[in-house]
Amino acid sequence: MSHQEPYVTGKNKLGELSDEELILQVQGGNNHAFDILVGRFKDRLYAYLFRLLGDKHEAEEFAQETFVKAYIHADKYRTVARFSTWLYTIATNLVRNRIRNIKRRPRTVSLWSADVGGAEGRWMELPDDSHRPDIDAERESLRDLIQNVIEKIPAKYRPSFVLREINGLSYEEIAAATGLKLGTVRSRINRGRTHFRKAIAPFLAQEYQRKGNQK
Amino acid sequence: MRCKKAQDCYFKNRDGLLNEAEKMKLQEHLSDCKTCADFSIEMDRCLGLLKDLPDVSPSENFEWNIKRRILEEKSRMIRSREGSPFGQWRWGVKFAASAAAAAVLVFTGVWFLLGHGEDPALRSTVTAVHTPSRQSRVPSMPRNYEILDMTGMNYPQNMRMVSGNLGLTRRGSSSEIYMPFEDAAISRSDSLAKINLLLKRHIQGLEAENRALRQYLSQVRSRR
Image 1 (tube, each protein chain N blue to C red):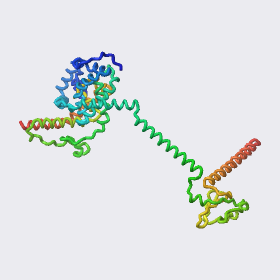
Image 2: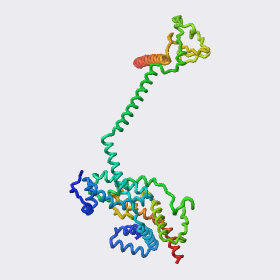
Image 3: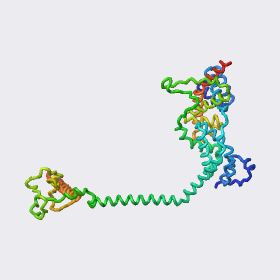
Image 4: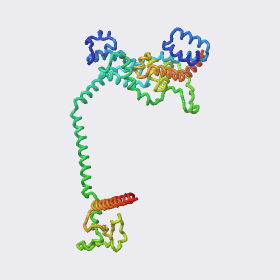
């Protein structure tokens, strides 16, 4: 074990430690430190994987796998990188092949149809949700739509885009997590943003038009 | 500032990477260029939707599942490090199967080399090999075999020439095969060995002829 940290006991004391200090505790065999790390990162990691994969079960499966790998290979962690970056690196490597091969599942809202409008495809008319009195249902529909649009971002750009726009990582952290150069990360994030805008803008325009008509 | 650069600056500004002077330039461009202004408004609006996404959480037993999987992984690692009896047994089976396969291969090879592997029906019919020039030396041929007279070109109708000096024939319904070489019952592999020997001799003869011709040529050249 490479750690030289004193073994800290007590959940309160452990809770005061930084992520990097906690993983050093894990290196020293302190399992409580790992529990705290899981508690701190499970939601963020799960959100990242869910946005990437679009499937709750798969996201949970991969999140668990990420934590297991982080625990088993804790001794390989070096303090040069932040723990969060290291964790995202493990997760990104795990799902890299999965998101390339991901198949589109039928969703409640489908925006794009290649069958209509020839090879270029065409934006489909979305069903009018104005008959729904329940605002929550409308929001849910919007969330489904956003998730669907995120999944339509090419797999190449999606991890960088999600890490930046949803998880709020810096360019440097994303570069470390994805193993890409800084310039490539910036380019991929911007391309992901452009794809997202192109996919969602027609729906937004329609929404604004509908709301304008209602007023 | 051109539109392409303005859009690039918009993204940088969104990530907080522009200094004050660059921000001013971008604002100037956006106030003059409607396309870029629309682009920035639309992009803000679209990306703003992502901020409204709800927080998602894994299931309640998430942490317990991690602990379970860690324990399973640890057990698996210990098993693979120390080697389980089952693992050793599996390797033993693999070794035994490989050894058996190798033994079968060797046995089959030896079987065929010794000539036991050929068709029994065919082997029973290979009864005599006869060289016409030595016809007089084979008075003791079995009664039911007919001696083949090759010198008189009196080949049977079903005679099949294998090489320049070797012939096979089937006679009547007994389907006997005669080979005009030796007056001894041999197997097919023996006859192939004979063919090889003949070919070897033929090649040796050609080589000797070649050597003689070379010598003759060198002598002619030296004379000139």
